[in-house]
Image (cartoon, rainbow, N blue to C red; front, side):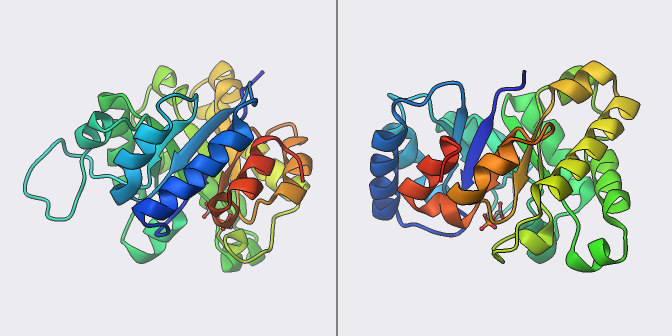
Length: 251
Ligand code: PGA
């Protein structure tokens, strides 16, 4: 059985005081939850504050991006060592917004992934097709290529530590969710790819989140699918009650 993992990617939202309010409310709502990994990915500026607030809980901390080098002349960048130092245990890599707006490529995803594994951060690696690619029937080709290049050079043991997130770009922030069956089909395809590239045990062990307009009222049907192990949540992660509903798989 793969352990469910629910992650809230706050994107570029929340000041430190707003982060404090959100996390305080959320803690009360999920304090009884067990058997689910809960991950919060606030912006860099709120990471230390959120780390303090969740220190007495099982909630884990993630950053939304990082550089692959340990230190150096990379103005504006944050290193894996810095993130570990302030209590991050997860790192989101290759989100479609970083790919679309900030020049993230499969090559930089691969470098960041290797760095995350090297420095002991748990990577959440995002893949997904655009609307045009889906309509052109290219979904599996695009996702397959992103996976192959993103995971290039990793051993099966390393891949076991990776969480994947399938996020169809056309479903992010649009209110359009892939149907649970559509999502499950791609997740199943991703497992086949993992089985071919690594081995069947790894393919069955890796957790694959779905992301794209996940809400309390659609989470249960998504989580009922055989290959969906969690959610990477944007908008609904910014409200304590809606993210708590997602964590509990209930609307
Ligand atoms: P959304 O974002 O839940 O707002 O659609 C998902 C994501 O980008 O991870």
